[in-house]
Image (tube, rainbow, N blue to C red; front, side, top):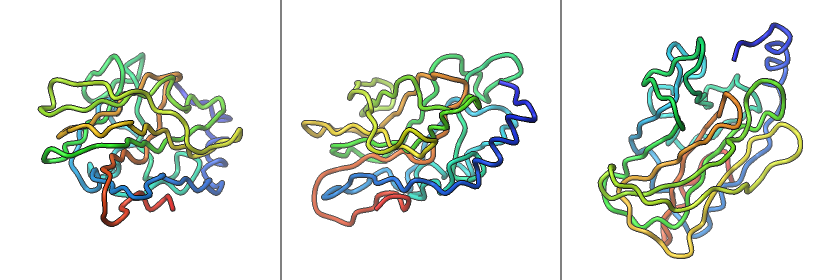
Length: 204
């Protein structure tokens, strides 16, 4: 979408608001996506909201601002008039993380911006998590639901905790857009068991 000057001013003001502190519920779990490589579909060409050095989404550093001013946010969009993604992706945007080896996954979590305004930035209409052993054949784990948030603009965690752990070498978060933009800061995948809690530094 094309921002008006009035809308842009509103966004700039919102970028100065303190963030709600999200909590990635990871007690007894280890974030095995931390520092792993990934691919993204849905970043615009010459985007003002890029993926910093291809590391932002698994670096364990969550966003600290409710607004686009924090470099931790990666803006995902869909192709449209004047809005072409780098991969010409025309359907749902997604993030695919390569865990490097087969792991037991018990929980998925994504940190998102819910602007709740007219900026075209909102939570996705739906968020579905998938897992795979080869990166080609995918099984749906289910949909993410909110963990934290408020009626005001906020940073929100959508997560899915599984009844039974699954084996995966690749994990995917797939976004169905409700508006133009989905702003993502972190994608985490957890395994149960002893070990250091390596959840996002934005959490507790």
